[in-house]
Length: 276
Image (cartoon, rainbow, N blue to C red; front, side, top):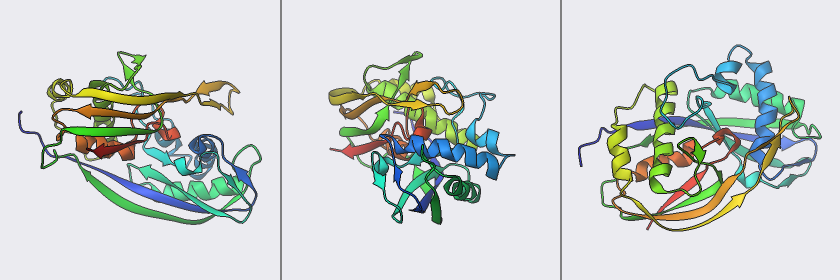
């Protein structure tokens, strides 16, 4: 195997802590509720930056498999799915930011709380917004890894040849992980990663999926702008893989923070890697 160039992926984890001034019930995907309310607040807080943050256009070259440029943030609120918050109760969630936009996001979330969240426009008081930088190495693991389990913690939708993949075969999973991380680094980090996409894909093809336990989750969201309903579902569960995995595991571990697949800003595609 040829030598690989070592790279890192950097991001900020912004933890928002709120106190509910009104009761608030989250749906089966809390990130959907939060993201919709955040969009309106961001337009008010940072009108000049709104387009580049919330709706970046596909105007620059990017790897295959990505139909559009990724937004520079990811919600992490799975622990709030289906939860009812009482008035006076505190709760938190995280947002992973790939450019250093903590001040802009904190200002928008403060406005979001004042405007209200959810169908009842429940008001929230922002108690704190704490930002912490993280740097993840993409260098191969120093010791051999021959077996892993990947948990798909939230609905995940992977595409292969412009079609939804029926199962997360490793070459498909890794291709979407690699493309997403490389695109985030190119757009919001120090620049393109110097990696051989084709060679890594060929080595990923040698990794076998040996077992899986996956369930399809049907989740929809309603656009407040058009009134139309859109699917934000996918599969969840776990899959087991075997083969020479040392070079791939750091990328999968990084994908735990970036998400993988479609609609990651809604909290989709959250994974966890367990070395066996």
